[in-house]
Image 1 (cartoon, rainbow, N blue to C red):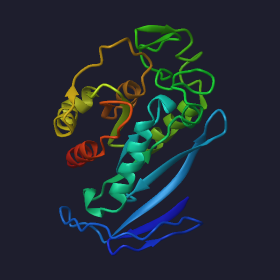
Image 2 (cartoon, rainbow, N blue to C red; image 1 turned 180 degrees about the horizontal axis):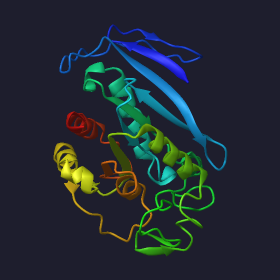
Image 3 (tube, rainbow, N blue to C red; image 1 turned 30 degrees about the horizontal axis):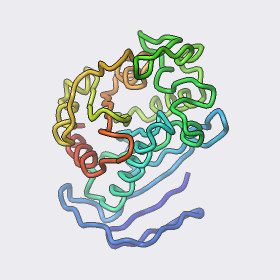
Length: 261
């Protein structure tokens, strides 16, 4: 694991080959922000095509929220760019984080799909339909709705990417998961996220609609697994289009929900 420390004074001390141009970070006093924000990165697994699966933690706290992009790889590349951009924005603003709360960023949960320009994993399984929920199914749907035989995989968690993400979530036990997709301009929270007001707050701050996904049947979904099986408040955010990150809106929404955790 590589440790980095970011200072408000603009110095980035890099270890083990990391390098970055020195920046001057904004001074944020909302939480009595620390002068430095610790950063750690790790590899939590490997894809079917042996690409590393990376996560980055800011703040160093055991209590963390998890932001996930790129589950649908090459068809939703703006979610990868969004999570990377949010990581950069928070990294240069230590005051973004409430006391004793960290943020873990997982920008590319499906690196094979990202590299290959596909929505699915390398073997055609949909990584957001491969989770052990009550409604998991071998066959799945995409927009149309169009039936995708075998889209859910031969059995839940059959894929190295979903196995690795499940292990990461189980280890971290985040206080909140936000899973980014595109494109519908919609925020959908599970029962726990709704009970805490997180779905409504995120949606109103970002300027998105909120409510259930109704475009086509969704089974074996990551967010459902996190809520139903792990008891973790989880929000799925559909960006308005496939091209833009809508960074300012989503950064403001994340900032708004963190104090609720």
